[in-house]
Length: 145
Length: 145
DNA sequence: TTAGGTGCAAACCCTTTGCAGCAAG
DNA sequence: CTTGCTGCAAAGGGTTTGCACCTAA
Image 1 (cartoon, helix red, strand yellow):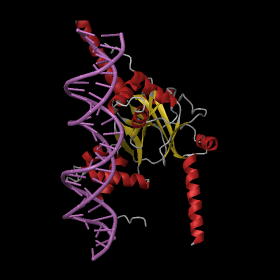
Image 2: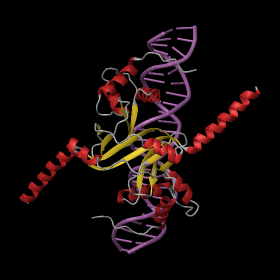
Image 3: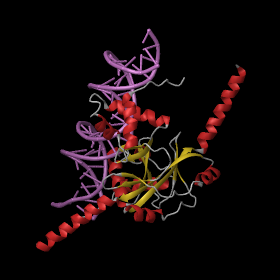
C-alpha cells in the first residue's frame, strides 16, 4: 500500500540543498536558494517534500527556531547549538552525552524511547564579537561627549 | 525604565495553574481551565502573561509539541519526555546527563552557552498499553473471521 | 490620576491543503 | 494511461497586537 515514489528533480535539489548546507536551513531558505535554478518552484512543493523526506528518514528536523522548523541533512543523533540572538543553528561535534539514559528511562517509566534531542542555547561567536565591538564604539562615543 | 508591575489575579491564577499541573500545559489548556473561575478571561491575556512570565524567568517553555508551546512551572534544568502518539510531556527525574559539556563547547567554539534542552521522544506507558490491548482485540477479531 | 492589565477581534506567520494541470513510469 | 508531483492560492492554527476600557496603586 506504500506509495510508489516517482523521480523528481526538485526533490533531488531539495535534498542536495539541505545536505550541502551547514546552516540547517528552513523551508523559506531552501525555497529562496532553489528559485534560482527552478523559477517556477512553489513553497508548497518545498513543504510537501520536506515532510515527505522527514517521514522517510532522509532528513531530520532540528526543531523550531524562531518560529521556523530548521532541517538537517545529517541523520545521526548529535547535539546542536542555537544562537538566541541571530538564530544560527550549529552542529556540536563533541563527544556525546551518554547514550544509555534511554534504557534507564524505559526501565523507570515504562516508556519506549525512540530518539532524543539535545540543544544548547546561548550566544554564538559572531554575535559576541559584534556586540563587543558595538560596545567599544559606544564607549568611544561616551568618551567624546 | 523597567515597567512597574501591578498585581493581577489572573496572572496569579496562570502561575498557579502551571505550577500545580504536572502536564506542562499549553496556552489553550490553561485558558480552558481558568475560564471556570474567570468567565471573561481572554486567550490574548493568557498569551501576554505567559510571554511576560517566561521573560521574567517565573516559568519556562519546554518547547513546541504538536505545534503548541508547552510550559513548565519548574525552572530548574531537567530533561523531558514527549510522547509521539499523545503529545504528553513528562518530567524525567533521573540523574542528569553531565553538566560541563557547556564549558567544553564554550572552549571549542567560542560560544556563550546559557542553557540547554534535553528531550526524549517515544511512546509513553499509557499509549503502549492502549495499543497492546487494541492489538489483542484485533487478534481476537481475526481469529473469529 | 496614571500606568499597567484585559477583552475583543483583526492581523501575523509559518505551514498545510484542495484542485487542476504536468510529468514520470 | 495511471498515479505521483507541482503551482497556485486559499485555508489552517497557534500566537501576536492595536485599541478602547478597566483596574491596581
